Length: 113
Length: 112
Image (cartoon, rainbow over all chains, first blue to last red; front, side, top):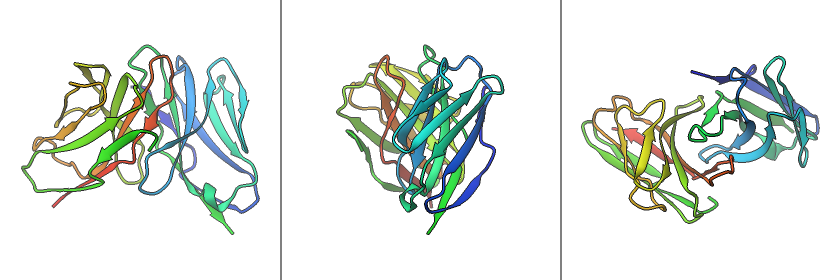
């Protein structure tokens, strides 16, 4: 079946630096792509999403970029803080098929103070 | 977490036993989902339900069963047929026409 995968399993950044987390997806028909943050022992929390007909979307300190040509998704976190340390998942959704989210394996982000 | 209650938070099961994980929501969302997460891995879909009295198998449904008798509730039973049940189980809901999910805080199941 379709899959969503990540390039880097672990990312270490210095506090205050910008972070970039990457994701490759395989289903070109997906309608939305979503980034989630998961802290230890908790459920994933929604960060930001992007529709398939967009190439960039900005939120508070976060930006998601979508490159459909190479099926690549990235999450940029500006001025990374210790509280950003978590596992980050990208996920894709194909509407009309139970609205099922397909998750990637995740990237661990470690912020060094 | 945002109107979704999963219980218990920790659960221990003896081999050969069935156990049921609870998921209750007060968000009035139509769709509910069960995911399994293994250490260092992503989430895999077990079962999902888009409406009361209806549910579908996900990618790893073998050894699991569900029911959806009420809109608010979507319990997951881990049966003795599930050979490797130790994992973190997450329940999620979504509203029709809205793609984003809301997740519960999870149940950690351990076989002893």
